[in-house]
Amino acid sequence: MRNKKPPFEITNQMIGHVAEIAELVGKLSAVSSLSANPTLRRSNRIRTIHGSLAIEQNTLSLEQVTAVLNGKHVLAPPKDIAEVKNAYEIYERLDELDPYSVDDLLTAHGIMTRGLVEESGVFRSRPVGVVDSEGHVLHFGTLPQYVPDLVMELLDWTKTSEVHMLIRSCVFHYELELIHPFADGNGRVGRLWHTLLLSKWNPAFAWLPVESIIHDRQQEYYNAINASNDAGESTVFIEFMLSAIKASLMDVISTSDEMSDGKMDKATLRWKKIEEYLKTHDYIMNADVRELCEVSAATANRILVGFAAGKKLTKCRKGSYWVYVPCDK
Image 1: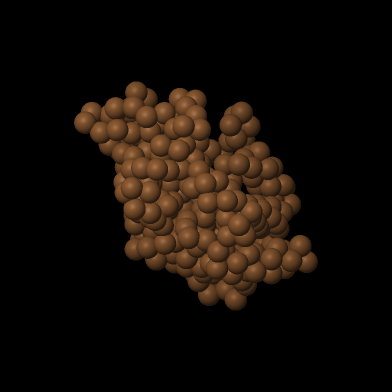
Image 2: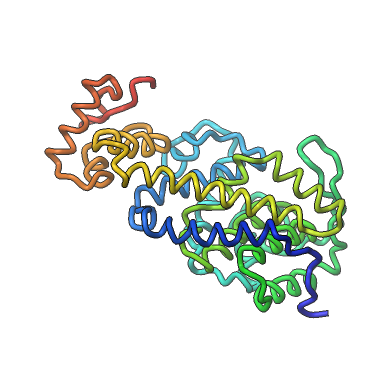
């Protein structure tokens, strides 16, 4: 039974996507400062967590997720706040996880669902029907007594298969959803594991996560799962995921290209960085601009004063500090 290949076809479309993604990842490494910039990395991670949880009907906005992770008090359902904190904790430990270990998969589920699910960090003990957001049954998960062996088999196949990791990770993601090994949290763990597998192929994927990509194309994601369920194999899902990964890489690179080609002057480039920062923070200070734009305190001050004069930012007091907020807030 071990290493039995899950059912899927390798199509010309997939091969084309894999070649283009590999090329784009090479470009991304050359142009992007993502991996070197801790502020951008944190901002991306926050968007990942917001994306993954929003897919599961978590009600917190991006601003609220940011506030929770910055230790601020947020008026929201305690369950939604706990989901954010748990998800952030496991994403911060991504480097420590072995993508082929059953124990690590269970540990990740345990952290992701801590205090939220009765069967946290263990495989489910009861049968389950998988429903979409409108309550339609998509399929019935594997019977609980077969779950541990099937998950182990899937991890073994993922580890030893010679199929390209871009395709392998998509197969894993789909098959895990199909087995539905947990009482709750299957989607969150499946997307986390997809990101983990891709980040072992190329570290850029730790910061270009699958979750944000899916959140932008949520209905297509469900349609692809349903089409694969109907076909009894994951081919359609793999093609969809690869096209979504390719599109998101192109998006990141086109922004980086505009910056490096000088299509943006220095002021526009700086404003882009500040705007990006303010998507996940309520305000910006001199120290933040120094780090983001790699400038001195005096230059950071000139940048902020300039944007305030141009009516993009407003200066205001925050305790004993001066801070800047977007004019539309």
